[in-house]
Image (cartoon, rainbow, N blue to C red; front, side, top):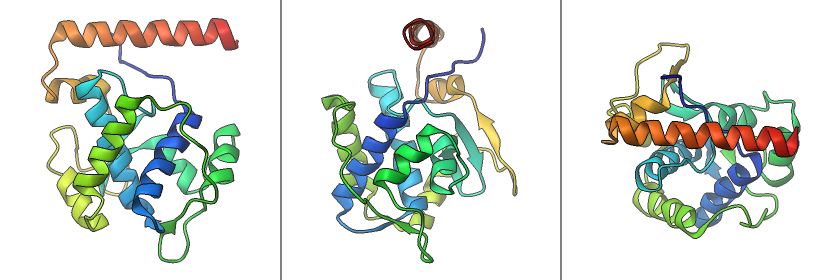
Length: 187
């Protein structure tokens, strides 16, 4: 079985980040936002069998993170996703905080995804960023990479969440279909 790869959705990712920042109501340290977006994708994989962002997951020293979102926050991405992100969310200030510049709306988010984001924020939004990082160190999919990063396979997360081989195969087939349709429709 080949590895599951979802299509990264920059607009939906910006909307999800903005949703959490709006719930927070003030600047947020970006590590906390990274953790809550990871927790939201993880919960979405469990509940609706599809991530919110479609990002790639990696183990870093402070726990699992979304790779593309990390690059967007650190301004390491030079593609259209960064111009979209930077239109709505600031780069980190000296205290590692980011904030919403303007509201991107929520046209890409479905009600189930908004409920997941809300639930994650209600449960974890009050955590200190390092306490949240420590919490994610207990996830079975996380491996300590030292000062580097290690990819986390979607299949490993799904297994940890209790998905059967059949369910994982169906999710993989759906991801392949989405990639194919995206290629056909968007070239």
